[in-house]
Length: 264
Image (cartoon, rainbow, N blue to C red; front, side, top):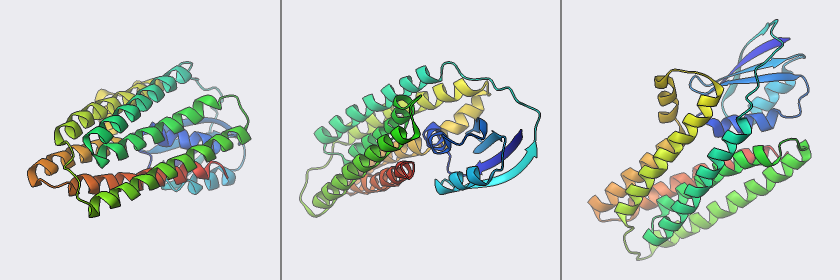
């Protein structure tokens, strides 16, 4: 048995972990995957050469780089029996906030909330692919990934068109208080999701979990929408909301392309 350590610089939260798991699924030489999200490290226990595994990691464009490979006598690995239950928990939280943010975003005329709702939906897709294709074939997983990726891109493009329409049109200001309040709750929800999943993997110290939470892209996006809400009120302009919406739509499309890579 060999043990290879990868540094994954863009592995910010469990969503990226699930993308990596799906990408490496089907490689028979892999015995176990050990993720260290706070330190952005992936340890692969495998029986054959690392070339195929390394190519797959690099293809995801998550900043994957091999650090070391060494022989190990470890052949038994502790499996997490609650993984499926935990994935269901975070999927439900993410999907509920997709509905909440999409609804409140439309009502309050905030593109920032609408865009963030799609980011929540993107995470739901990743967890959903992991769950619904458990025990299924690699072909089944690839089909689901392709549908999820194209659907996500379609929604993001519609969002871009709406941003342009509002940028050049004469729209009412978004409700800044709704933007801020809903984003604070979304921030808490993302923190809970990351805590639940990380807790299932190890008994790390609380400060390490907090470090992981506050370096995640999802949390940064939530903070961005909150700041945009403050600026909308301060400047009496919808431009901050449109700017943060555009940024998040770009991130959503990038995530969609990562999902589509799994279908190849």
